[in-house]
Length: 292
Image (cartoon, rainbow, N blue to C red; front, side, top):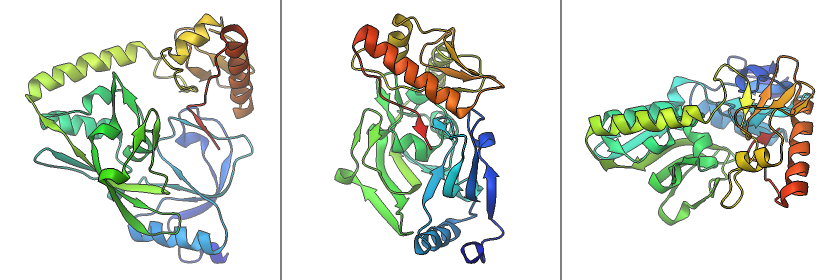
């Protein structure tokens, strides 16, 4: 097929996506690519544009639900080491869009640079964290971001900095196809003291999550001053199941996908939660998880 010509070394067809998501459920991608560098990425994006093939970027899959019928078009995953490089210069940390957020945090903390440690325990890549402006403990990644290099849906590489970067609760102005690289301006502190702070935050974060071996997602955004988990618990939904999908018994805003769960089970459970919370508490929950 002309779409794949020259890309055989990094593009495949009908690739199962479930192994790349935390929920471990869902169908396959019509086309799937793991480019080895920016040029490969740009070329496959341009080829898809020429053939009117939709393109999606898959990060660490921690905030993603793949529908059972799969995903039409091209799914790209920046899994090659060339997209995950991390470096430190003075108070600036530069990280590739495919770098794990956890790795960037540990690098910054080890260098005695404060700011990102509040995000410890949040899964995902730098690209995903910036797109959704990941945050915790009153801090978010956007407040430390000074420059972003991204690729548009036409395959062009662009720079975003200063007033171009806008961040809000779980939102950012970064709507390009892929984040290639980002720079974070941090604050110098004692590395030992910062490490101890990060460890405490990590313990707090882990205590608020279900067992790490379970296939889970955190489906809803917090609503105003109330956490989504608290609202779900107040609506009496802990432990509620639809098919193989279940609300965690320990934390309300977590859905567990058991071995027999389907993506449709998760979607129907989310609809039930949203409906019940609105009925009991009069509050509309908004999706935090992305559904493909």
